[in-house]
Image (cartoon, rainbow, N blue to C red):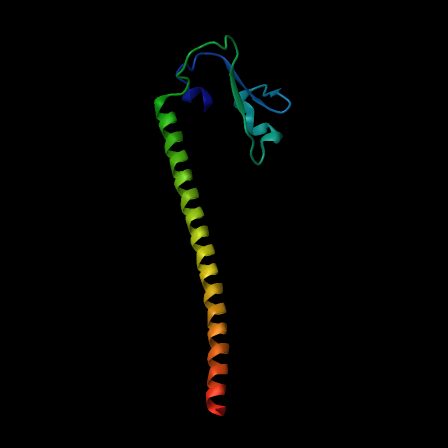
Length: 117
């Protein structure tokens, strides 16, 4: 899977976990690695010569990652907006009930005074 996403698939590379750095011996047997279950963050490195200039990934994969990042950011913004609106609604609801209680107490007292006077 990784090799197919590279611009230079013939170039040797390895994957590793960290901390501490632990090289995955055979990238084709990742599923056997119990440390990767249920999920893990893997790091990539060229086996030889770290000085190659990019790009490293094929354009289609870079575009796909950018689209996914944009979707995640939009979802996060929507979630934050909904949370903010919920807080504002709750604050407005609390303020409204307090105002009604004050109005109710004031009008009842005034009504009682008018009736007795």
